[in-house]
Length: 408
Picture 1 (cartoon, one colour):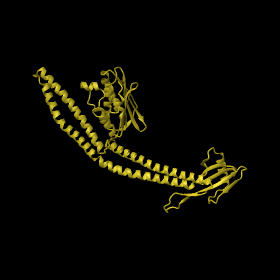
Picture 2 (cartoon, helix red, strand yellow):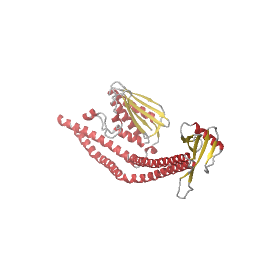
Picture 3 (cartoon, one colour):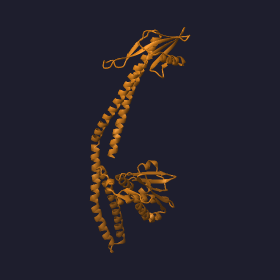
Picture 4 (tube, one colour):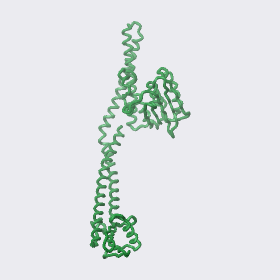
């Protein structure tokens, strides 16, 4: 959870700053482009009016040579003859000039840019024909490309620096949360250890009292009730201890997958299904399995059995009467895929995302009546699956029922 929180902190920071950088750099580039286009337009208008001029663009600090936009004016008479007027140093070959003039004369607008050459143009009708002003925009476009390139470099360097700073700051900011999280886990673990002994003693004493023959029926009823509640509490303590141990293993970066040898999970799933057949019969449903033989996964047998039993217990408990609980184990590339599905009341979408949270239960009626578990079974199953590098997901619809998929 802390690692995910840290990633989200870094991602949000980089996203916000990145958007600001893109906005600033993009607006600067856009403003500069509009300014240079305005300069180009003024040069063309002056050239049409007979004031053949040029404009300086680009870096004027002396570090690079200043770029010049050069203008040339061409008069095209009605008989088709062309005349270049003025003494502009802009040189253009006759072939290129013919191509540009042809494009300008065929255009519907009175101003535009050549598709093939870096030239902007403007035309105006005259009594004797057409006057066309041309401006070489190579320097202008080069300046914009240079600015865009520099902006890209600035963006990526800034984002890299921001990532380093965010990574360091997020670690510093989350240290109090990490300490509190570790203290909570230690408290749960220590409390669970400390509670196991007195609960064991209470259960042992109550069982001794239960065997006494001279206890009145009314008193025996209270003894049996105390035994039931103590057993209930001991189960809760053991589940909390299991979760605390999984959290400590995850927090320390230990991976159970590297320690586990490959085992035949096909046989384990089949054995658990046989074990739950009478349970399903008592609950008014049945189990149907489809298991590919010889599937091997890196997981400890007891841990995998606990996951399967938890899924089968939930599936048979909440399946509708007379329906079938399907258990499918298949290969999915290099992973094993276990799907346990049942037909029953669909889980609401707002509850589905919390299905693997601790102490969360979707069946409010059972919770009010004090029936069922503690809402820790699926949380423990998830912690086991994640500790072995796997994933566990749930889907639920009215038509297809509820399915839980485990991949390892």
